[in-house]
Image (cartoon, rainbow, N blue to C red; front, top):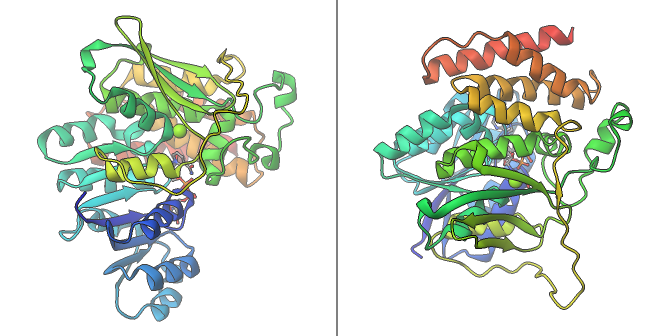
Length: 382
Ligand code: NAD
Ligand code: MG
């Protein structure tokens, strides 16, 4: 593998910091050209000192002065509106988009437009604007490689296969911390309980999404766009151990699965090295130990977010963007302890029923829909 010039958007987050651990293991394979963060300027400053990027960006302008003082030989930018410029820098080959939420969409689009290899953790990009991103991808020589563990598993199962031979994608889900609660018990769920995921340690937003299983809904939309597969051929299945990261069933009845410990470094390094592999120093499965790999159906009644997401993609147009914006607002207000846990799907459902979706799909109207939905979602919370 040739040395890659890498921009990491959201380098201070859960995915971003794990990507930097990989870079530390392979200094001969990666050169860091740009690092960005939202507000954690102290950690970003440490990263800049260690990896010496040519460009760095702190989105939150309140921390610009403090941050700038610590950086001597990199160009320091501020403002989230400059993220797409970082994503399309001439000097960059590969963009790892590990931003969270709609905030990552335009950077994905610009990176694709400018022909980059995009390692995509920011699944919300594809949820809100999959149609626009895939259209740009077809026009350019860019590559879009998933970082999400399920989609990395799908990609690994599909190497050497023909897309026409896919019968079904089985997307596995841990079921989150509330898999065994009753609907009544879920009424009383606290922020602390929802943040305590049984298998994965991740950023706050995706951890809440995993507990409501909105994450699986978003991932079904993500798989739909990445692999050009209709949603009714993507089947979510609960697999509490998170060892099988997803499966493909082919038209001859054979299924392939990808397995491993729940460790995001594995799909991150695969996205960065694809189609090759690089060695990774990280714990391995012990196959000599007894493993109980179990499966159960998804309870759509207890986890209404999965269906809301699946229905939104069937509805098409802006519906997934409305779903995403309403969910971002609901999760943020829940994390601030301003609404109850069970209000999250209610806010999403009400927003989907109320936002008009007539305009044709483009970046400007998408941003408008996102803004309008946020306004609406906040207003129903009041
Ligand atoms: P995180 O909250 O830990 O990190 C997010 C990063 O983005 C931080 O560096 C933060 O400074 C930056 N950021 C956040 N909001 C921003 C904004 N508005 N403008 C600019 N920068 C902003 O999140 P994470 O868990 O690393 O997740 C990142 C993405 O990867 C999400 O889309 C998530 O769904 C996806 N993902 C994460 C995991 C995981 O294990 N953490 C697994 C699969 C997919
Ligand atoms: Mg995932």
